[in-house]
Image (cartoon, rainbow over all chains, first blue to last red; front, side, top):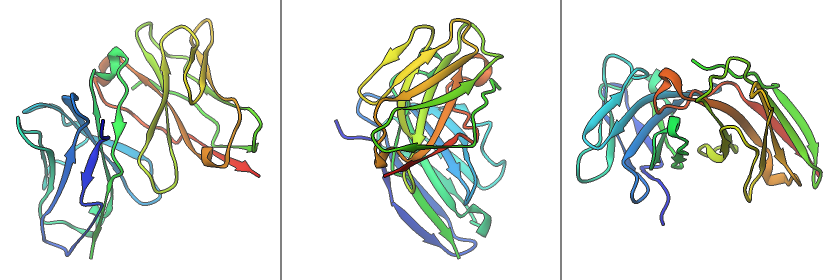
Length: 116
Length: 111
């Protein structure tokens, strides 16, 4: 069973461009989570999606950031008009069950975004 | 948010057991206790989780206090590959499905 896959692993964008980060969850997992880790900082929750629905987006910046998890295909985290402060490692995780019911989350290797 | 308290850092010698403590005095009856770790330049990795009883898996053991206000992650024989930041996280309540990472414990392993 392949693990959580993220691509690209490294992404370089210039200020003002768009960044699209993809995440393919583990087979059979319908819950997807995105986290961000700024340089020298801890991991912060961004958004939780369950097939075609956003369940919790309390950690998403109000502007420029969006996420989707379509019925078919990977989950996408989209950052419009990137700024230097968006440079970070973005991690995706998936789970079979919700955490508060004891389900564990499996993380991908991350996408490291650098904004020039 | 359910709160946990962990030491900032710990040191261990290779092939010796390591006991990583976590205090969670405000835990509620339905909160699970999860441990994750993050090796340098990698994504977090699930280690173990439990509710009330002690748990064992191939990676570690989780010892949960009887009152559930604290727990200890036990690595039975530390290896250099175990050097990582270890996070103790509670789930439940109004957190929904998300993990709320604290600062964790940075474990260093000496050869």
